[in-house]
Image (cartoon, rainbow, N blue to C red):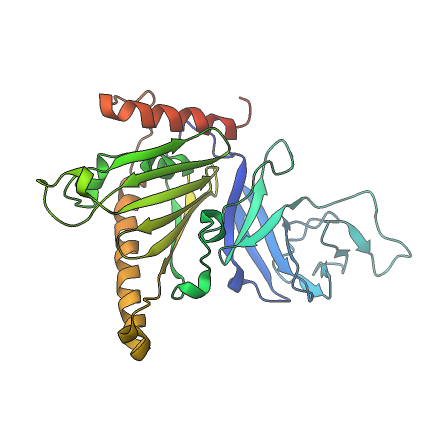
Length: 330
C-alpha cells in the first residue's frame, strides 16, 4: 500500500465507534493510529478507551476481559484496571501495582458517536468536537429529525485531509455529483482549530441558471481533520456527520451519518409511516452521493503541490495552511 505523504497520526478528535455499539458491561476491540485499543463501559455508563494490553504480562484486554462494576479485569491473572488506566487490584496480593498505568484517551460521546482525543505529544484537548445540532445554534435537536442513518467503510487507502479538502473543492460537485452549476463560497473561516465553510449549491435546474438565484446551500463546521458536520438549507432539511479515522500508516475507516428533518406538514403528521419511508429514501440518496466521493478518495494520490486553477487557489491554500496545525512536528 502506498503511504500518504501526510502523517497518519494527526492531532484531534476522531470517531472510534457508535455509542450504541458499547452497552454497559461491554468490551469493544479496535485498532486506530497503529495502536490496539479497547473501549469498555462501566456499570455506571462511563465509557473508557485505553490501549489494549495489560501492563502485567501483556494479555489483550479485549479478548476475555471482563467489566466488574467500574473496573476492567484482565482475563489472564485477574488484575483490575480503573477508568484512569491504573491498577487497583491484584487479587493474589495485598496491594496493587501503583507504578504502572495503561494509556487512556480523553473521550466524548456526541452525535450518537464515541470520539477520542489523539495527540502523539499527549497534550490535552485544545478544541471541542462539534455537535451536529448544538454547534449551529439554531435551537434544533435530534427530536426534530428522523433516526440517524449510517455508512461504515473500513480499511480504505485514504487520509482524513482528503475529505476536508473536498469541502472547498467547488469544481467536483458538477462532475462527481451532477450539480447543474458550480457552487460559490459565502464563508471561509480557518482562523481556529474549528473551521467554517458555507456555500450555495443546488442539485436542480440546468446550467443556464444564475448562482445569484440559488436559494439553497450548505453550512459546514470542521472539528479538526477528524469530524465534519453539515447543515443543509433551502433543500431537503438534512444534517450530516463525516468522520475519518486513521487505522495504520496507509488506511482509514470512514463513518458517515445523516439525519433527515421531520416535516411539519399536517399530511406528514397524519401518515408518519410514509414520512419515515420518504426520510429513509432521502437519507440513502445523501449516502449515495457520499459514496461517490469515497470512490475517488480511496484511489487518490495526494498531490503536493497541486496544479490548481485560479479559482481554486484561495480555498485550497486556506485549508492546507489550516491543516498543518494538526500534524506533529516532523
